[in-house]
Amino acid sequence: MKSERIALPDTRAVGRLRERLRYWTKELDFPSIRATKVLTAASELARNTVIYGGGGEVFLERIDGPRDKVGIRMRFVDQGPGIADLELAFTDGYTSGSGLGLGLSGARRLLGDLSVDTSPAGTTVEGTAWRR
Image 1 (cartoon, helix red, strand yellow):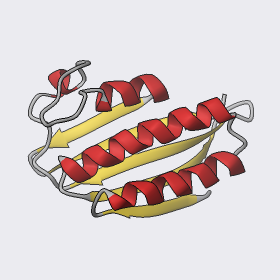
Image 2 (cartoon, helix red, strand yellow):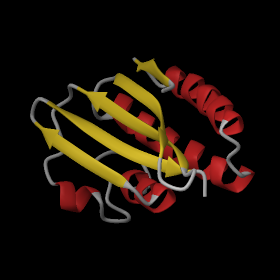
Image 3 (cartoon, helix red, strand yellow):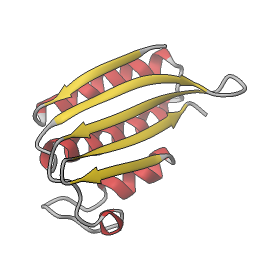
C-alpha cells in the first residue's frame, strides 16, 4: 500500500502538496479533469489546515476498492482550536476569515466523500478521491 506524509507548516507547503498529488494522480491514471478537482480540493483543505489550524500535516494513501476501483485518501490533521460550528462551516459563503467561504463545502462537492472530526484539541479532515 502506497502512502506519504507531507508537513504543512505554512502556505508554501501547499505547492509541495499539489506537486506530490499531481504525481499521484498521474501514477494512478486519473483523468485530467478529475485530477484537477482533486488538486483544487486538496489545496483548499491544506490552506485551511495552515490558516485556521496553525499548520499540520496531510497523509496520502492509495486505496483499492471493489472491481478495480482506485483512489487516494487524504487526511489533513492539525492541533488548532477546532471548528466552533461545523454545520455553519459547511455553508457556502461562510468564512471565519477573509476567504470566499468555499473551502469545506467546495472540497466536499469536488471529492464527494469528506468527513470532519473537530474538537478544541484539533481537526482532522478526511476525503477520498476515486479515479472514476
